[in-house]
Length: 391
Ligand code: FAS
Ligand code: PHB
Image 1 (cartoon, protein in one colour):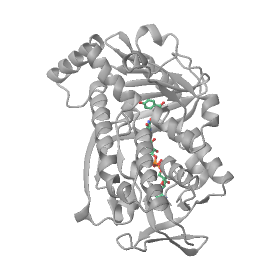
Image 2: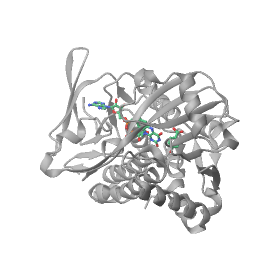
Image 3: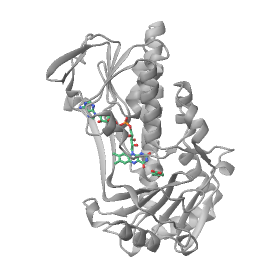
Image 4: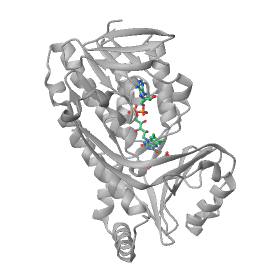
């Protein structure tokens, strides 16, 4: 096979890049190691920044989102029995976030790829980018017992945290910065009406909790847990009882419980790989960085990477301008590190940690008390939560 851009990974990053390039006449092949059903079965993010919504519109895949998504102009922060609404729109001159599950984004992207006869090869095994430091890179993979080769001009590593792309960069050329948090999130999805109209982030001595949603009839809840938490030790009733313990009393009574349709534990870590380019290989999305989900930035950072990378590739193919590709890593990393900072800050603000002592608990209480009583502090949170500009 020959193509212009070989894309590794059919998550939101890879599919969005393929769709954006296709709409500008640039050919790509997407190689995904799992089945489409497995990719579609993942339950992940739920909060989209305006930049991501705009990019989905540019990709021509926002029709269902426009019909079904919810617009949120605020979030609640709850602690010490108090609850304070952060007026995102009022503090940012009208910006908001969009509630629409990553699962739905991925479904819309798959359908668009199919409609445009995009080449998305799933269950591709042993995908291996080669020759990325030459002018003629290629990617090999096996499927149905046969080895295939995709000759290309560029390789986009959109294969997530556990992908292969980062591993083909010589260690001496790649720096990886990491912070592993001693905690995880136990997530539950239920076909029940959400507890409130907007998200509630709870800081509690028993641990963090988050009340989120996917639609007026589908709710998403998270409880801070140990990184090695065994989901089988959390039957639904234990989850609901623990969530109620952590919620402020004035909302706990509104909790509508029901059977979990999904339950899983996600570890929390911050990771940044630098640089995001090696020869003709570019890293984007979770292949390039990981954030703790506290700030709802993971999926949204993948979107800004794909915005910068697609712009660079389009400029290259349409008028031979390489500036976007040359500047991709530095431009993307500036926004990545700001989202890493915000996600790290929100995680330390809202969670409890095994090594907390009286001093750290006092500082956390003071930070929360200052936050909800300072317009300046709430503005900083709001600006970052709705999403910093794509500079
Ligand atoms: P993805 O990991 O989504 O996709 C990478 C794709 O590459 C996968 O389909 C994988 O199968 C494939 N792949 C991997 N190795 C390969 C190989 N060698 N060959 C071919 N294909 C390969 N973000 C939020 O904003 N909010 C959240 O609540 C949230 N929760 C999360 C929960 C979990 C468990 C995880 C892992 C992430 C969560 N995230 C959340 C972050 C998540 O949404 C990511 O930011 C988003 O999936 C990034 O998309 P991609 O970069 O496409 O990476
Ligand atoms: C979610 O709905 O999955 C969600 C929302 C906000 C977050 C993290 C996850 O910060």
